[in-house]
Length: 421
Image (cartoon, rainbow, N blue to C red; front, side, top):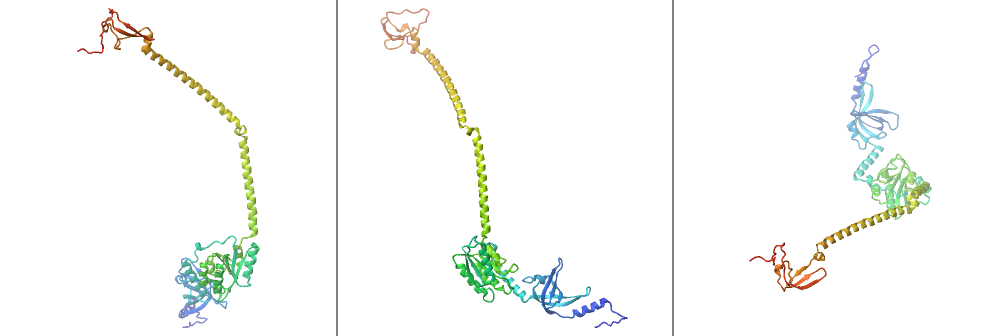
């Protein structure tokens, strides 16, 4: 219902704002197409604020979207994406602003294309085709470099010229393929398989200049990605420029930002290597020189020591020690021998003193009867008994003529060894 107003009875701003809000609220849901120009996610809010811009005119409208809807989009919605929204117009009376409340968001055109690529990336990543542990290192100096590119293209010239400028002796095996269009993926796969079977090719470069997302779409083809994953030869992806990133960059062993960068990756720079060789040569000479000087200084110190300056001094000192020890040994042995000789003489004198022969030499004698018994008493003899007298120097054979007892000596038993019956 239209408000009745006049100069005398004007309507307040709130009435006009509420009337506009009520009229707009009666509008139904609409499908609107545009490009997302801006996305704002404010912390703590369950609403995401966006700006939807017309693709051909300089007209834009604010859009609010529930955070749950925004987070459920696959791939995630980014600025610049083309979308179709199912939204309801909404007028915020307090600020007098018109916006759209998004109920559904769908990618279209390039956005739909990017969404398909993102879904393919997620599937292949789940299979492990992009795993870092599968990446192979490039050879330092390959025998031959395989190159897959379009014939007579700027990418081919960049790779060949820069690689030969860095290493003039580098050899290439170039296989041309269609790098754009519906047949591009199939021709590139055939070229890769041919180079992978070549016995001298150590690394393969896939090079193409920049282009739109549609132009680079063949390099996100699933068949091409699986072919690269199955190759035994390391692959360098040099597709487009730095911002471009087809899925081939993820499955390849090395990603080059440009074809020129790929040439720098596959072959070393001869000037840098020669500089490194010269530096290493000088470094080795310097280290060897310092080592020789240090060893010469050590030898000079060793030669200056008394032991090496006159080696005989050590021998003379040791000779004196040996002579002193020898003399000391001789004296000690002589003393021990003298003491041992004295001990022998002493023991010999004691043994001689205890010997019966020594007693005989003092004038004593041993008398034996005819049976060989020692006579110790006159009672054992009778007149006419045959006797054998042992002296110090021999024996005397005698005959007893009689016996005379000694009054000072008690009578002895003629047979001291016999027992009384």
